[in-house]
Image 1 (cartoon, rainbow, N blue to C red):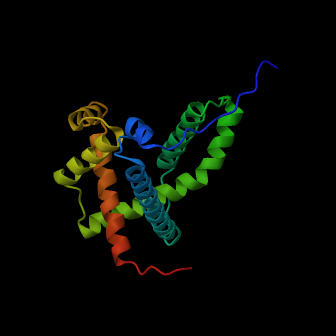
Image 2 (image 1 turned 30 degrees about the vertical axis):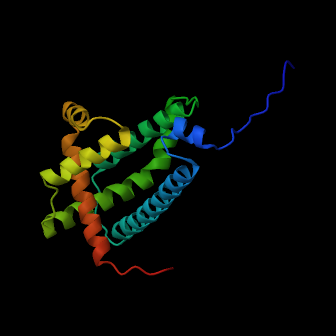
Length: 189
């Protein structure tokens, strides 16, 4: 053994938070951390409500789900899983057995997600819910702000990748889900 290293956390000082976190002082830093934690808790709660609503929509309706949509969603989920694992520094064997095992694990969730999407899509059409240009502009601004990238750059990347339509559809779905949640009676379980 060559050396034992101990990880030390630096003392939280005004100079440190000014230099590393763009805050005026420690108190400002603590306020911003608290606000970020509270915002994350609100987002987690909203995401949980949305997930519960989507599960209820999916469970409350029975209809055949097109296999091609399920296959596409499963393939996307497998790709996302492999990408996330690689980003985390993990090695994922992509042999046929592993891929089939992942496909089998993701298929029920993919079926549920596609069913929920189709129900939300039908509700949006029935209720006349659309995402307009202002919604898309706001969505792009939100993406740009969270990525720290200029709005026009985000717009150009989305347009070049053919993703503006996907963003439009996602925003319409989000508006439809917000509409459904506003009409829902929410109770504690």
